[in-house]
Length: 585
Image 1 (tube, rainbow, N blue to C red):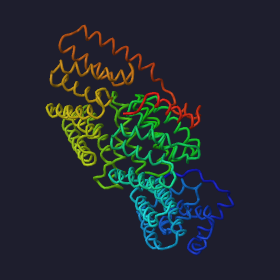
Image 2 (image 1 turned 90 degrees about the vertical axis):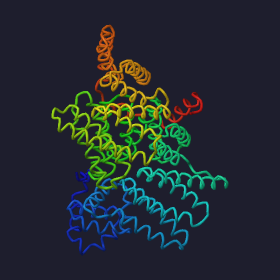
Image 3 (image 1 turned 30 degrees about the vertical axis):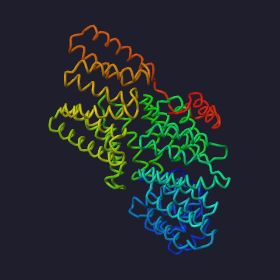
Image 4 (image 1 turned 60 degrees about the horizontal axis):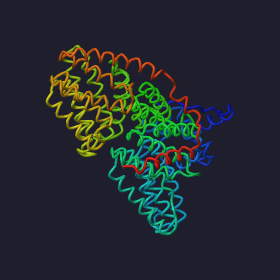
């Protein structure tokens, strides 16, 4: 899908003049470059509108031209349109610009400090744009060149620049799943922080700690991520860029979600959504970032219907800004695919979920290597969907084909996760659990049991006995024992344990309780305990009534359009509640 146009309505006379310049582009090309950046950009945007991508590409591939265009800040959304169109057209403008900048940095290594400082600033803007556009490898190359310039002179100004550079480098390495390099980048930043400290200087650490929180979250080191999100929140002060504040709030919210601190997570992410919309506008990529994290919160507190709506809104923004073949669009497709899968699980209508999962995989494989870690979660989601479609399929041959495809996807995801995180990791455990469910569908019951037990053991050691993830795996093993292995006593204990965890975390109306209740009804029927059958039929009826009352359809964005608290109040509320609870684990 091509990037759709955002609103761009210059004055009619001005627009006519721009069109006249573009009509004479070949003769006017040199003169166009001397125009003010806003006017120069409008000429290039008209080239884009007319589909003259080869001419536009020849302009944007020149570093001086593109650096000037980047100064037209109010045209940034439109610039993303042009840039993505060129990338889709096969013009490798991102890598050309990164290479050009790298060469320039090598040429000016011996120049005076002012020249290098100017180059660093250009690099921060260029690398920031490439990062925002999702071209992480090229952004990384730009920031590495900036870092080399920062470390030529062992002076205080360059230490500040080096810290800023490391923060940016850590962000793109996180985005590109280069977690081992991300850890090294954080340590580098710390060395420059220490140098500044010994000279009585301090750099704000909010952005750095926020990125470390994101790194640890991605590696499923949830306790550590939570600890560093607290440190990041302590660093939020007046005068920080809004983007930094929004990103720290987002990361802290996610860290709270996985620690099941839902009230804190809700306050943080709702304020992040409000700030992003208020400062950047409702069509900005940063606003879509906050919506994705809001959707993550809603999904984890069992407000599944609203999470689907929020994920769809985020995808719409990203598609409008970036178009189709972009990594940011792919991640939004994946998030929407999974939430749609959960939402439609009981109905068996998975067409929409499958569409978004396949779109995510298609985009990622188009722009990234086939063994990239980002494919692990997308393949996992598609495999989950295919398994459910297969179960409901009445054609045996089609069922076997779909189950085998799901099996291949799950195995591929497992291998990618083990390569990135090792055996003892929550992500790896999730893949074992998914394989356990699949083997049950394939009627390989011993293999299914082995996978579920593996998943439970890893999750319990990492997350504790009463975590949501543990409850999921316990419930799945109960289902295996109940429906396929006739181990009713073991199944009963596991169902009751899963129910207890679900109620404790989410309350009596938790959606996952339905499957445990239905499992117990079947189990008690099988062993002839009809008193219990009657009891759990009543429990299930009460659950249905509670669900109807609990989640009436409302607009999840209604209560974030205005914020009753200032950022300072939100931060202080979080930190005070944290101090009241004592040190984190």
